[in-house]
Image 1 (cartoon, rainbow, N blue to C red):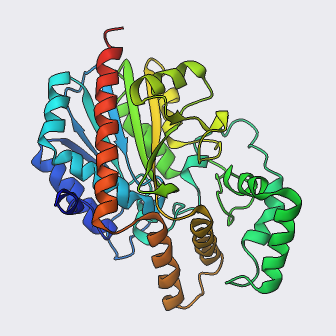
Image 2 (cartoon, rainbow, N blue to C red; image 1 turned 180 degrees about the vertical axis):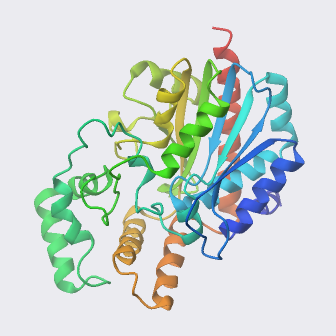
Length: 368
């Protein structure tokens, strides 16, 4: 029964998710601001925007950020958690008593959220875009080798394509293949995990939000909700900050020893360049921070990667029939969002725990 009740906070379209979020935030008396994406419309011809809802004193020295939708269809999970939090009297009562400000950033990638693609309107993976573009772009020469293997001339891959992939994996191994694909690349604009050549609109907007709502805080926690990696329904707490033992120690003191750090080789996630949460270091340099991505598992990784490859192939071939495009997007959505009560209940239980842990950690941090 509890899972069924929680399930009502989740949505089946971006329009529904956005409306639920804005309605719940308004009902709570939150400060709301929307940042429309210029020049684009959604899959149902709707407005696309990053929406922000804030609860608590504007001058609070302690602040918690909960964000969703960095990677398109993963927004369905993160949005559900945000809406569930806005309906949770006990959780928000704890927030109010603690004096901690809550900032919710909904739909960081509204285009991908609506159109069901991981990357944004520019085919940029936003967790590879938040870098210093004044410096030389990160090099990933291995990507040029794996790109034609991952995205062959036809889809689905032919037997010859499968043999070529198998030969590469036999020579270099699965780990090398995954690293070449997923660590990020900056030279193939229509390729996978593309980081872009400049800050995206999404990047600039998140920075505007931080400057507007977060610059006075001395202690900041940030939970960015993701889906895909790991066992179905299990939430891995992935350290999302810079390579710093001190910052990692903060995250583990708040969320537990099972915060896994990609740079230590523990996580399901590879090390990535330019995650969204890294903007807090630039925009709020005065703050001590605790940062995690809460990654909720869905399907086995190879299945997810296959559907992600198909989605990227669609980016290269927009001329495909509408029925084929719908099928590819539906399968990608199923890979990142398990539309059943048990999974949603497990998601919210773990997200709520992470929020309570963050509030406790922030409260203790202010006394240190």
